[in-house]
Length: 276
Image: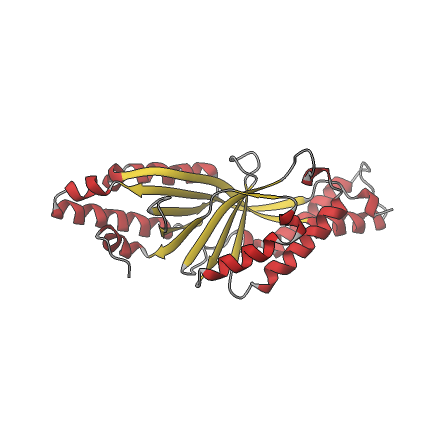
């Protein structure tokens, strides 16, 4: 009886808002700048990035993007969308922005899905005599969820992983005529996500995964960031995931962006055509 009380929509916990901001550099325009001016602009950009990375409530990082999808990817974690907007606007005030051309951006919020914990919380309350619709049920459930938030706070409000490479991509769950993730029961979705999680756990010592929920925020439903010191592990992890039913039947993937992390003080070298 308790299982029947579980809602079809799993609860989620949210943390930092995330902005992935990708630009190409207008290299001809950059080279036309006088040498001394280029040095000043690069130093100004490096100082700006260092100041953003020192944000007490959030973090920022910069990546050199491989392929022609872009040159630089800024990643920002902040407490609110308004704070992310301030970061965007502050970048636009730099002289460096005069030679940056936007190629892609994505907004999401750090998300932890609670498929298992939603069911456990509901079952626990029902067994205690509380049922949905009864006085006190909503407050008791909210207390259970807040307890979960406290337990996973370090995952919701963490710094950007320091590993050398990032792999970012947006994704959806299919909702077409033949297969529809959202038409499955809570139990079916939970079982598939459990299996999906087992594959991810095999790589936990090599890959740090940050899931950003973006339903209602951007064009896809999630933005996934994988961080690792060896880029080939992205291929191995994503390839294995593709054979899992949660992906094989129900996942749609957007563009993939691979980047190499740059320290703020490395920005002048990057703009001079050097990667350390």
